[in-house]
Image (tube, rainbow, N blue to C red; front, side):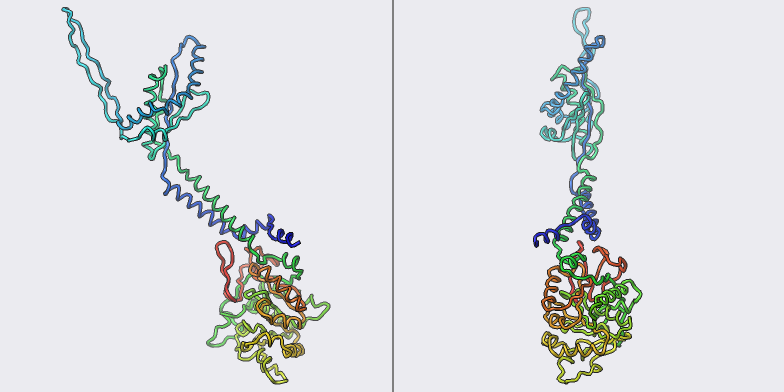
Length: 532
């Protein structure tokens, strides 16, 4: 069963694949375009370009025009001989002559003429015209290209049923490619009659300045794009497959059997917002939970908190809930934000509510409501007086129907205080004075305080932060609460972002989550952890 469950967790269907692509779309685009630009840069600036030029040659034998059969047979023989010409072009004889032509490029301006004599009446030969030597001139730039180098750069392309073939030459410059192709073509034209019984060789199309043949810039750019897309997608997929955080309801409802009490979208509250302004302090801005239900009570996120309140009330059909605690598996999962905002929704509904900060290691309630923390819960629990005067420790929050009890000075033995008999007595006392008592407990896996107190309350709600809470952590937290016989009402999935496959109400995106420093994301979407 466990193996089947792990295999199911490690399986990604098409819908999840599309969600992964949507969440990391910018990473895929940036890496794909980035490597495409790298490919383009390599092709243009790093790899030396090569240029290719072609010269076309027609080789045939003159046939008897009066005999059609002979002409046809000669044509067929010429086409069959094209393959032979291909081997001859790349032979040492032709390439050596071409190499010489490249080293000493000359053009015959005037052909040589022999001396002319005539015989006079006496029978003696008389010189009529002197011999005239051949007149040549340089026809271009000389290139030192060896036979072996020509063999590597020259190739021959033939076509079926054609007497025409092309000689291709590849070089570092367009001009050199043209010169090499023409040199080989002319060498073949001049040398082939000495090799074979050929009497008609025509250079149909001399080579022109070569065109760039490599590197193929478009191909390099496309290859870079594809490689970037594949690599970035592989990295994203591996990180998603190795990500063991809770990303949706399926694990919590199907595997842990928890009830979905609601979701809270990612939101922001203005840094200038405070419940009660005091000169010389900005603790609320830096450390407190952000109270969206007060700052913007008509927002979509505030409505989500009211829905959570309603769902909790539905859980109280068979048994009344007057003492309620919120906790999480670990720190920085948003329990203090959720606790404070849900408490406010109860107060806004007209229920007399007391909000208690029982996280004696990382208290936030005093910062949230901008009050002093000189006295509080620890004052009550460490007092030796038999009677407890709530007026001495409970403060008004500045919100109608909502009172707050801060943690008080942080003690050296918080677990002993939370699990003490006096804590149970105090809970019973406040139940008689308030309609709803809501407690912000410490994370379950951090301390044992939560287990000590949770079993004495009417219900416990687990806060799960999407993409942050580990599956193993929330599983262990549920096991510990059940072992302590705590009544787990369900869970609240919070900090839901559109890029993480937002769900629930489907609105409220664009807000920022407000319980401490916002977590930043890396290029592939994994959040960098910050402390609460």
